[in-house]
Image (tube, rainbow, N blue to C red; front, side, top):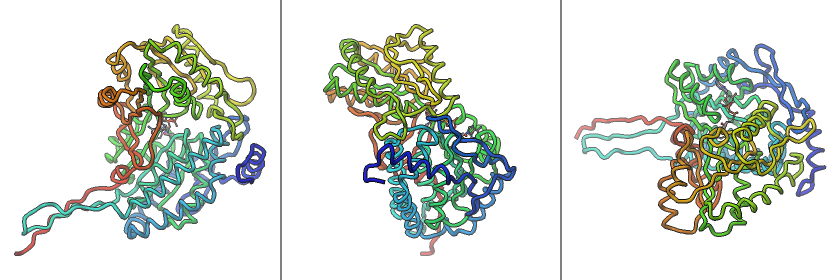
Length: 499
Ligand code: NAD
């Protein structure tokens, strides 16, 4: 491909790749069919074409993988390997991902419809995460407790055992990296269950993990459905931790499964309905409007931290909405393989119908449709940027996570009112606001009920800061050394010394 691949380059690569897809599960270092022999179709939502029929794992495959994962953990070929050695293997994996970055990006684009440019930044994020966690392994110290001279008390960190990572489809590779990076770095055996809507990059990653030298049974991939293989992993007595990213509804089910089985740790990264607040004292209405449009329409709105509730101070509301609509107009969906496309296709027909249904409800509830609201004709699943104004907090579109390109705009008059409206949600994943007043910045930051707060930006962050929510957005933290700590146990050692 040319240094900056064109649409034609990506199309040519997609044709070759589509004929050579890995579709089998990866268990104990081998690619194998599901025990049942069953498969499911994964579809390119931009064209409606079946990409591949993928192994549909169920409880029998989960049992096999868990047994292998436990055996690998007990052998200690990874768990007891010196941290510096684990680091080298993971850095090799990151290097292989780098070498195969176009293929990894293309697989996510074909599988779930995201624009290739955003899939490429996902791959960079995934590689960055694996590297960061690898580099952290040999910098995480235990403790010596402050005891008297007759004792030596240590606090050691040990891996948990078997971690099942259950991930969604909106950032298939990046969400995978956020889970497996710290879980592997800490020395666990990891079983990955990708979403049934986007299994392909995970299977490709398995081949890279094998090439990097991860020992047999330490990293396995089970494609399949949530209610079959996902549930079996969640109920397993031999899985020590569920690392989950997905909807709040499924997150609640996983907590129940843990209670019904072995009280495994459950780390949840769930949904959101994030408020983005525009104060009249923000620096530049044009620039903020562009950011506000990107905050909701990036990745077709299929983003857990989408800025889906836009709260605008009434004194600048009309002027702001004019600018917002102009920015959104330039973000119409296009061929996901075209590097110029900002938005791609909606992941599948179920999600597409769900989004259109929310748009219908918005109209019926009396919100003012200012833009979009329509699907594009054709076999592909495309919905244009949709903006509702005059939304109130009793409307379904103002409260529920739509997970599509639909923005709800609310007006407010005072800072106090904006904070109350922002916090009036079951969710608490992200919140952001735009202001030049430093006193207001500190006041509002402290009062927003949210796992992350973006001030004069949206979705800022890198590997050094944790990512996660409060309230019904979950209890876990991805990224940074905090995630590495989550995948290890503390062991207290009390040694009596003779004087
Ligand atoms: P989902 O909850 O439907 O599915 C997520 C994963 O759980 C999939 O792999 C699915 O197969 C599996 N699953 C479903 N039912 C299961 C069960 N009974 N037992 C075990 N596993 C089961 O979510 P989705 O539609 O894939 O993703 C969209 C959701 O993910 C949105 O709510 C979004 O906000 C959330 N999300 C959150 C974050 C975050 O970091 N907080 C990031 C991305 C996406």
